[in-house]
Length: 150
Image (cartoon, rainbow, N blue to C red; front, side, top):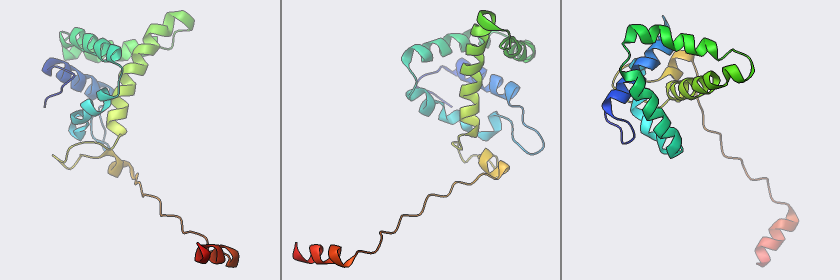
C-alpha cells in the first residue's frame, strides 16, 4: 500500500494504532482487516496541510515505539483526555485527531475488496438505500393551460 501523504513507516504505525484502538471482536473485524486504510488519501486530501504535517510527525514519533509499549501508551493517553480543563486539552485534541481519523476510516464503508471483511457496514447490518425520486405533483387545469399556451 502506498500513500501520497504518508510514508510507509507512518502507514504501518497508523495500522498498528488502528488495531490497538479497534481490535475487533467475534462479530466485527479489526481495523487492518477491513482494508479501510487504503482510503487514507481520500481522507487526507480534504485535510488542512498543517494537520497532515502534524499527523506525519506524530506517526513518525510513534513509529519508533514497539507495539507492546504502544498497547499501553495509547489507552493511557486517551484516559488523560478525561482530565478537567486545561490539563486535559492536549489529550482531548490527541483523542479527537487519532480516534476521529481511525473511526472515520473504519465506519466509512470505504475499503478495498481484498477479503470478506471489506465492509463493516454489512457486519453491523447498516444499509444505505438511495432515496427514491420525488414524483412531480399532478398539474392543475390552470398549469396545463399555461403550458399549452407557451
